[in-house]
Length: 68
Image 1 (cartoon, rainbow, N blue to C red):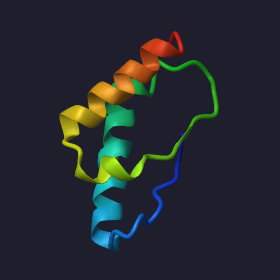
Image 2 (image 1 turned 120 degrees about the vertical axis):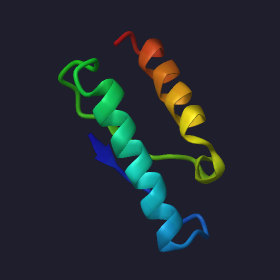
Image 3 (image 1 turned 90 degrees about the vertical axis):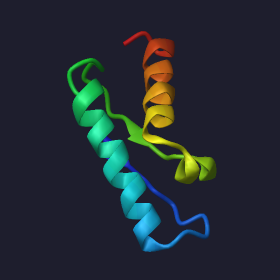
């Protein structure tokens, strides 16, 4: 899994918090579910204000959409 967290006019603290949340979600929910694909996650600007549960539900919806 690759993770790209752009600045979107946010400081390093906000970027690192989002990066940690996404890595934790991947480790907990998706590490064994997704087949052997190369996946790159690049969040949108509204992800900075999203709660952990919202990020989780969005990633689960993506996982269902791709059939994993």
